[in-house]
Amino acid sequence: MAYVILIIVIAVLAVAAGSWLLLVRPRRRVASRPAPPTVEPPGTGAQPAGSTAVDQAEAPPAPARAQLPPEPVLERPPPSAGRLASLRGRLARSQSGLGSVLLGLLSRDRLDEETWEEIEDALITADVGVVPAQQITEDLRTQVKVAGSRTADEARAMLRAELLAQVGPDDDRSLHTAPHAGHPAVVLVVGVNGTGKTTVSGKLARALVGDGRSVLLAAADTFRAAAADQLQTWGNRVGARVIRSDREGADPASVAFEAVRAGIDEHVDTVIVDTAGRLHTKTGLMDELGKVKRVIEKITTVDEVLLVLDATTGQNGLRQARVFAEAVNITGIVLTKLDGTAKGGIVIAVQRELGVPVKLVGLGEGPDDLAPFEPETFVDAIIGQPQ
Ligand code: GDP
Image 1 (cartoon, rainbow, N blue to C red):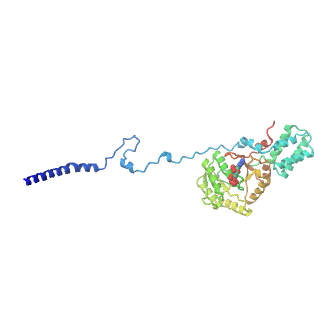
Image 2 (tube, rainbow, N blue to C red):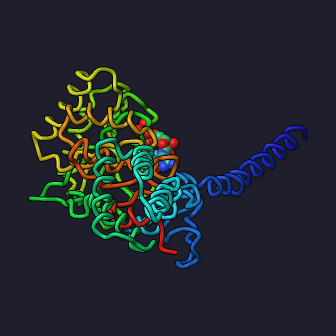
């Protein structure tokens, strides 16, 4: 009997084991199979057709649009033409009443010796310089003698003509910034630190972009990292590339050379080179500027050498001008800060001193406050509008 029960138990266990193998194991095998690909219908936008859930899990996350750096918004500066006329109010403010003082004196019925001395003094105080002041006074004296009595308007016309003749209405003040023979024009900007040299380089780049030119800037003032940063900011605003050195004190000539070479390769219209303005020794300055110029001239010509002078520094500015003129052949003067306490006479004095025309004037700290110099607008601003 015990044998029979044992056989029955074994038989039951065998059936149970067989059923487990047949029913449970195969189900496990199906569950361990990879899931079939889930294909999104095209056009749902969730993922591209043909990609799988596994693909999606392993693919690197697509860059979110919002994380991309924003495109720089470039400014569109106004063209340079006519800027002086629109800024003439600032010029007039800076002339501290020179025009009205002169007109008041010239309109007197009797012009005695003392009045002529006052006229000469007013001109000297306005930074015209002693010799030009004497000459202007002498010329006016002759004209008054010839004309006899004069109305206020005649006195004004006389003064206007005389000042205009001294400023030089027919001098060539054009800036040579147009490319030539497939090469960019090269403009060297020189001057003592603090005169506004880097600002002028940046503002000039803006003005040229406003006139439709492509510009490349060279930060060859390698002794001041701030100057390169400043230039970079100016360049970024109008899309002008800036060539600079990572190393403070790097050779300015090599930065200038690299920039001009890049300007040639990239078919840029104008390369503006901001130079260092440390007036350490005259010899050092001459060596440095001379080298910058020579190195550029190995591959192209230097079209403009602009000397930046702070108009508020009067005689001191003239001394600086002399030193620079000995170091390098200046082709144009940029008078900055004519909106401040500057006396307009410096225009006459510096042109006479260097025999080079004022080509640009700075009339404020705004980005478009650099204007081509126009003698007539300037003189009219000095003597004011007729009442
Ligand atoms: P740099 O050392 O010669 O390169 O001189 P910067 O370009 O750094 O300029 C020196 C200072 O003069 C800055 O604060 C300029 O904003 C200011 N500046 C430049 N040009 C003018 C101008 O025409 N008018 C006025 N009011 N400030 C100016």
